[in-house]
Length: 416
Picture (cartoon, rainbow, N blue to C red):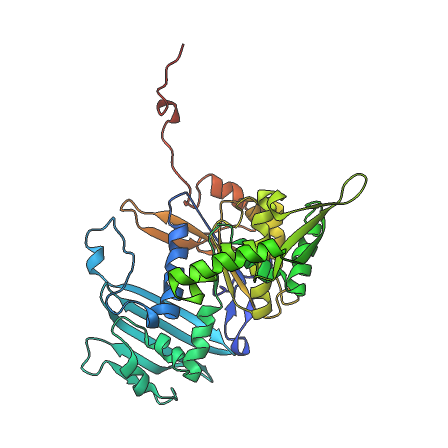
């Protein structure tokens, strides 16, 4: 997500400490089917989830994926490394692990004075006699937290759970990263989000702007009938008896059917028609509209918080022009004042012809003969300003497309 020195002006980079770092608000990853686009997103999600959840995970071992096309991969560690800027301060954090334990973990901070320098906040290495070492700038109960950190748990995760001030800040940066993999979220999640008036207005305005025929979305709450309340109480009581835990009763389906036991929420989509406006339910909307709503909610969240949205196949069920309009929300500091970022995978070449992305914002995924995935930015290729990038991509000039044999021999059905 770091901008190169290109003079491309399509999208305004995000300036970080005193202009020392220029970050890109959007990255689009292209590639053939099965080239590894989803896998790199899955790897990013694993890293986030492990930061957030390793403190409460299994007492033994690490559940990780490995590269199964290489028989030696299972014996090698997996390594994750990232740079984050929080409140104007630049950190480098990472860890490596195998199937049993966290092998290494590190946190560095960069100082931008007359000369860029790096100082160690903590370094953890299981092979050292003293597994943890701490720099003088990491204030807090570091040794006490280290004693509480299991072999298969991250020190960062333990630190956040024990309210370490700096580690909690970095933990929250991972917690604010949102991943969307194309599946439609549960209705109750949408209802919870759209009960907020700002969220409802944003989604409603965008859908009207997108010419979906929707004039307005109304959020409604209606009291349950006495019959519905009776059913709620019976089912709730039965589930409590089975689980012995109130927490297990609070699932998505149960809330959608019965709300909180007193009221039930619903959405009403007002469509313009020839004679008078007509109200339709969520399930009566098109697949594209239903897929767009959660994407819009996630987009508003990251724009408000200055965090990160990662979407696999953003173009799924969406018109190409709508995808471009979504990208424009991240385009400059007027629409993106908090420095939110979007990472997406796509096959949609109209983005390349729209002149909305810089060359360093387009990444290409390609597999080697051994099945490994490699990712290369378009800025690594020598291009002229008038080159047709979409045409060059489809012609295979940059790789990252499938190579076909003779399709005529695939179907061997009976011919009269």
